[in-house]
Length: 337
Ligand SMILES: Nc1ncnc2c1ncn2[C@@H]1O[C@H](COP(=O)(O)OP(=O)(O)O)[C@@H](O)[C@H]1O
Ligand SMILES: [Mg+2]
Image (cartoon, rainbow, N blue to C red; front, side, top):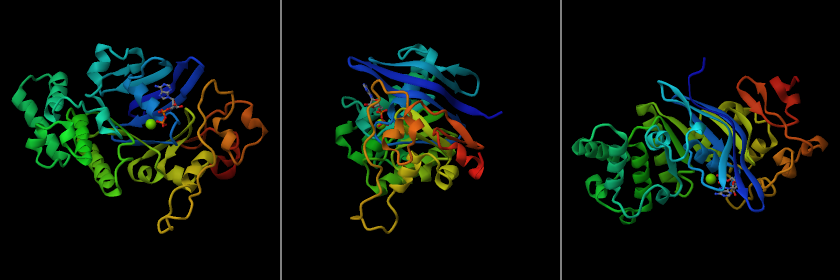
């Protein structure tokens, strides 16, 4: 049997708006093994962040996770996070301890009115049984050094606004890592950074993964970053996983027209920057009371009549490779239906 640390099954998170129901996450399933990195990819508005927030149970009104399971196995027992309220004792014990999250914008997790040290100490003291301040500070200092924070002793006593952008990013990672989480959710953590810092941050995450046997959910809209980071890829479009497989399968044998569109729009090494990219035409629609159809059909170059009549099932096209498209059947097992 597979040793999964997290299994997301048929997850649905909707926002109940005045003008209708916005189906941000609509029947999403994926599994995460120990020490594995899953990449979730898709354009802006596809439901990546809502998926992450659903796992951490931080969805706020008018949003609600109304169906599905989030099975988390901490190594001793398996619990279904969907059964725990956002403010439950159980979720407060898991969030920031077993499962941590980092964001594109460090100020989403750093509080402006407390020093970096105070925030890290709080995280350690709340979650770790020992109440020894000296030991807690030692942990914090070690972590600040590990993330490559310059002059850690001084930064420990600094407020976020006294740090540069890159240092804030490192402080956020130190805060997320200080309790050695079993799962790190990284939501576009390097999107706003230049390529050099981006490479440093991804290298740091890989190092932590090896050292602490951590699983990672890496969210991005950048196929290049995902190729480097992920073992397995979930391609999301309009609240659904439309393709799911190993990095090798997704890059060597992409089947969903959306996945192929994303790959085609990747910048090619050596290509002149003024050359327009082969971007997918149109935009991700808002899934407000969406019709029963393949969500991608409005932009799909391969659409046929059946595509706007119902939602395609997700089917296994080769071992471990799943696709949600009416036209994938003919492509199963290398062409044989
Ligand atoms: N708090 C919210 N209230 C209403 N709609 C939301 C909220 N958060 C996200 N959405 C909607 O849910 C959909 C998915 O959003 P999101 O998960 O943030 O996309 P991504 O992270 O892939 O860019 C979008 O249509 C977005 O507008
Ligand atoms: Mg997002």
